[in-house]
Image (cartoon, rainbow, N blue to C red; front, side):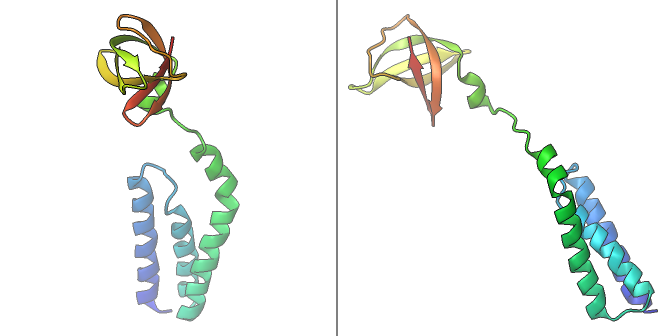
Length: 143
């Protein structure tokens, strides 16, 4: 038994686990940890380094493929960002919106935004509008 290789794979296993814990279960290195553990057992069995590496790569790949549906399920959940949360909200026009002149500002939740109308209609100061879309730093609104 090559003690140095057993220690190497044990350290790799621990490093991959620490990386996994540090990323708050984002599932970025758990596959490598399993592969390193399998390779460590190969080192204990006194298999050559080539076999240890093969077991590490194959083991990591198999675990990755086997857990992929689970990973997709838990990582597939999207969380709305701030701009997505603004769609559908009401805002007040603080500067008349005229797409032709390129003017228009609205106040949404206490923040002033550049705005344009969704259908090129002119919307006057003081009117209430609904946010239909966010385009960069502009709100696309309608009456």
